[in-house]
Length: 215
Image (cartoon, rainbow, N blue to C red; front, side, top):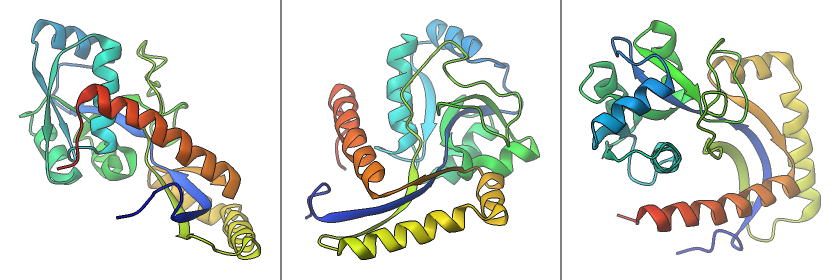
């Protein structure tokens, strides 16, 4: 019912939540390489996600091609049930947003193997990126920003963007975002618009190759 590229006005991209590859705390896998080796021995190994077309689903499709493994995507109705199944050991692994799993990771219910984003994150010290683990994949981390309707006057767009970016320089606000699994982006209108266009094009290719369709 809408045209993503033409019916909205990107204003400011606030932060992203890295996609992280998790296994359960009792999992035998402690590295991405070990998980990949197991998946090669057991074609069809299950990986959970928060739903069809979710960021975790896209990360999985990209990862399985990069790693050369055949896996079974198990789509749940939301992140919580997917994480519960991985914690219980009924599903071996999942790609989840860090913000959705940070509490379980801190409590020890989930074991992070690698960060799907371009950099390591402060709240998971010692956890490598997927590239460092030998399986570099494009960043599928979802982001959180402000978008207006088509035709918002430029002075208003600029003022809102500048005000939000100024708030992100507040150490208390920045710390709150980082502690809850976020990575501050603070992208203005032009950079935000470029990101949306780039990611739509990239994800369209992944969706087409993986057969991901609207349900």
